[in-house]
Image (cartoon, rainbow, N blue to C red; front, side):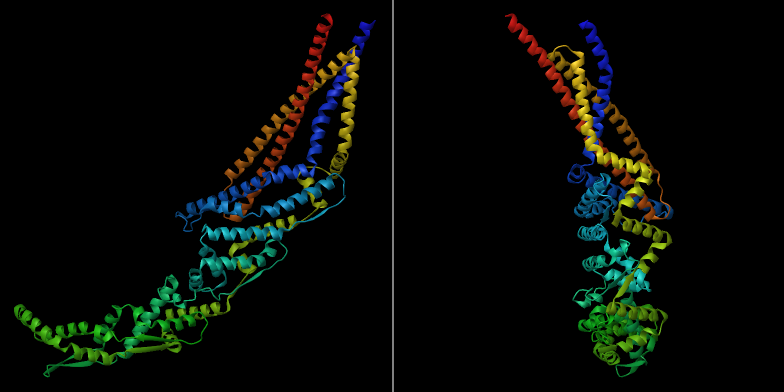
Length: 616
């Protein structure tokens, strides 16, 4: 009778064993995992403190920037057939972006958002309103980026200077002069000062922006840098044209009549106006023009061009021209005398030698004639320069550019959203506004936005969202109940399947060991499926980036890349949580399995030793 009863009890315990395993696995794995996942401290620890979020965020940005720039460069070089003039190191630029991100601000805002969202999902509160400080994030990031680009010379800031000046200055030459003359350090400081003005527009809080650029102090204290040496290409063209024009005008005004030079008191040699102008022009051309101009008067011209003075007087010293003009004058006189006395070649050689000796005796008188012809000091005022430039079309263009440049250097200029939109073009403006809208949307986030995103991306309706909130809010009590039921079932099974207490305990331990093995098998199987799915999903997304082609809108390319990359990063973050949770469950399962198995073996050893001791 007892044997039949024990088997009946064991048969009854079979469904209880199945029920126990069905309760134990969710209670000690799935619902425990949910409990872990809705703990803000756990999420912040593994998402922020361990650097997963920062690593993935920077990785997505770095890859997006590199891929976008390389694709853009390849497209332009392929379409034009020529290499790109602009030298951009995509890897270093992407690395600069990565290091510029204000992660301390982002992580602080992310931690606050996690707490608010989880409190709402657990029904600790029925609404939330996150005011994310996007202004601070954008401003900190831009400041870091500009400083890194400048200090490490990753991007030539002259490119930025040209882009800005070309958009606000009508004359290309004026824009080129300013762009080439602006020191990188000054430009770096101007960009940093302009960032606070630009941030509200970038964050979508304002529809306009206006940045006033004051060009005072843009050039070094030694204003002669603006003229002397003329490293600036555009200014060099001005300088060359103006100097040629002034020399031509000077020669034409100084040499207006022919000159007769008396030789030996017997005859004279006449020099025409054209010959005299040729002599003086060649002499001046052989000189360094910078040496002819008084350096102090150059300061006055520089001050005028930079708008700090309305008048100037340029002083030019031609004192050395008369002595330099002697040799070409003697050459012309000799040639004329030889032509007058044309004889045979032998006689010509004798005459040439004699004439050279005789004419060389007249170097001082000839120098005196040239000296009287050309003034030693020439003073050129603003009105003289304007009059000379006004005589030619090119001179008029330079004159207009000079006036524009003076006004710009004196008053500065204003760079607004209008110029930015003009540079971006219609497609670029559309994409810019989309980015601004996204930033604006991200700066204010509440429960309505969360529900909308769960419906859009999670494919949940409002009823399912509320059910999820109920599950999360009651999860702790549900886990406690399920764990208690599991323990009760475990005790009941032990009582049913064995007769004595030691065997009942062994049955409980054995069942716990089996449940641990089943839980490990289920978790490992599910984890393998999830892992393969995640790898497949990431591979598909990376293939999307590889297949994406540049279609003329680099902003669209960049945004598409970063959205895909950030999606990959988000999946990697979720996968990181999966690994952590699976490790937690595995640790629990292995610990329980080892403990129950060890106790089971120990009970048999104790029983065996007890029997041996009694028999002894």
